[in-house]
Length: 431
Ligand code: 4AD
Ligand code: MG
Image (cartoon, protein in one colour):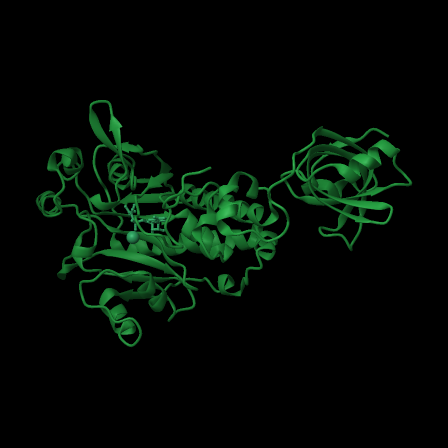
């Protein structure tokens, strides 16, 4: 019988047939004259049964001795078996080792976080990490499909930039021939130029912040999707965010339920993510915080404040109209109350904190110039940005959604470091 190449994911279509899996030996267990091999091929994990009675001695010996994570070609007959995880099993008829792995550092027992992070390149091979990375890919696809469907055009923005976007304290500096460049903290400013050219745009790319604090929420390098739209006002921007979040959550629930199960994520709170999302002003939020985490007017939220405010609601909540002085220079002051800005943060439920930051942009040339000066930013570097207010300025708004924050929330992760394949953390850039 010739063996057809197959993947674990679609092995159910080959019941009774002889197939060849190309993968790795994930684990092995023995029971008398049987060896149970767990084979993984990137698409899933499948149990193969090797029986001493049915296999040539040298093949059975290989099944018995081959080290964890050896690369293998496994041939066998697919059987439906309700007792095995996934519902299928392979009765092994042949096994070939491409490379016999050395003793594998990650055993199936518990390891500490530092050890696992040092071995991130191998840790990625485990079922839990597979589930998270699949959810991540689904979140990204959902963002793109949603925006494409709403008439937003993907316009990429640069990573090497001459100036700050989100304040000068978290800039990564690098040499650029005989001058200095900074890694992008956000594509927003360029996005605004693109929005004035194309109307509705988004950029999606890596973002860099030299965050000098060690938290469960901060990465030095993360991925952000940033829509920006001409003629979109503050309220319209919130409605867009709401629709996008609902779309992402629904899609992950529809397509990645098995992964959420593997992560033991209670999906009930996610099923309840429906519009409208509550909208509370910064001032109202201070009143909610008063009994638990009091905050003086004018202070920015820290993680405990975000958690406490979000704790009042069963779905994401917008906090809007922050004091102008805690937000970026480009935010439009509220015409009715110029000490606050038309910006909002979207806070995830269940203690996951801010997942989106955005708002309406300052469209007036003179006010923007003043704000740049007040923030101590070099006006020269923003000349092109100011130009956008000289040549056909229009009301416009946008936001940035942090992919890893959303993944951490949807997967119920304790720490954001698992939400990205190779996390860059304070004091960690290896591997
Ligand atoms: O609130 P932020 O700083 O907003 C901006 O950068 C705007 N320029 C975006 C825009 O309007 N186009 O960042 C947006 C989101 C946050 O809500 C959070 O989800 C994520 O980016 N984020 C981080 N994620 C991981 N690690 C960090 N250090 C992050 N900093 C921000
Ligand atoms: Mg923010």
